[in-house]
Amino acid sequence: MCRAARVYTVAVPGPKPTRVTLTKNQIGSETGAELLALCQRISEDGQVTHIEIDELKHWVANNRESGIPAVEFLSEIIARIQDDAVVTDAERREVQLAVERILPLDARKLVTERRKELEKAQWLADALKRAEIRQWCTRATGVTFKNPDGTDRQKIIAKCHQGEPLLLEREPGNIHNPRAVRVLTHGGQQIGYLPEDVVGWEGNRGIGWNLGKKMDQGLRVEARIAGIGRAGEHKALGVRIDLAFWNGPLSYQPKTPYFSASGRSQSAAKPRPAAGRGCLGALVLATALIFSLVIFLAVVI
View 1 (tube, helix red, strand yellow):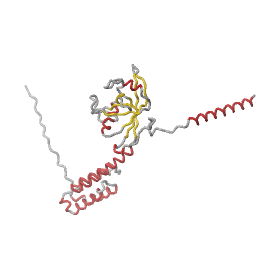
View 2 (cartoon, rainbow, N blue to C red):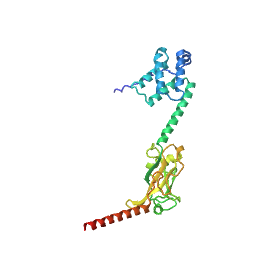
View 3 (tube, helix red, strand yellow):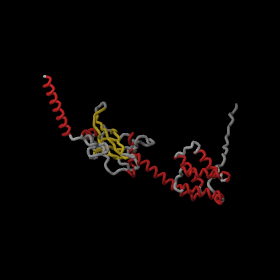
View 4 (tube, helix red, strand yellow):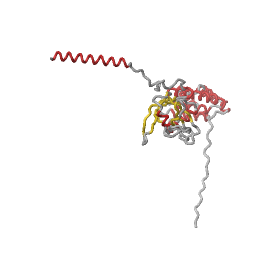
């Protein structure tokens, strides 16, 4: 009886990465001191420009034989990103990070902090450009159930009307979904819940609007009744809900109401022509047509 031979694998350590951070001995040389001064100057504002990349490229080309690992490191990166003659923003950031890696720790800390400040400011500016008051229409779920106090949600809904403002209340203790959001009338009576594809659920990894988690973070969500109707086998009353919320950095969300007093969103509200003027115009037009017809008949006869 033969036994299968055991196979053992031995991990072979790879080559140790070359240190590219400038050492004290390298900075003590004329070439190392020049490279340190150049890197500090072009990275002190937290970003590297195309002109500075060209300047760094020429300096590196003239000092390839210095024997300093940082020079060869920069040379390879610059040659690769300029291979297609187009330097993107991502490639400029790569050069910035490469320069930071070369700097000694004390100088690197200041430059890195400055870069992160600029990146945060740029992210905020881009986010505010895309930010808006987002509007979404959904439906209330659980409208056929009774409330814990015994009140009938169907009877409560029957007394509601289109355009009526609603209250949204988080229910983190919900055993079915800790991100549940209760839908209440302005008087505090519950008529149902927001659906899970709107509030999210544990482990959904950001699917849907995820309003439950965002409300915990301070997001203000306004709701109005968009319509009430009967559906389903038992013709139960259902409620469509208009939601409005800030789709941007939370610290910049507006404090003004998202809906007008009529229940329509502020951005969607448009002035309507006066009813009286419309009726008067129609009357004048009808009178003119009748008068023209009488004249035509008189001429023909």
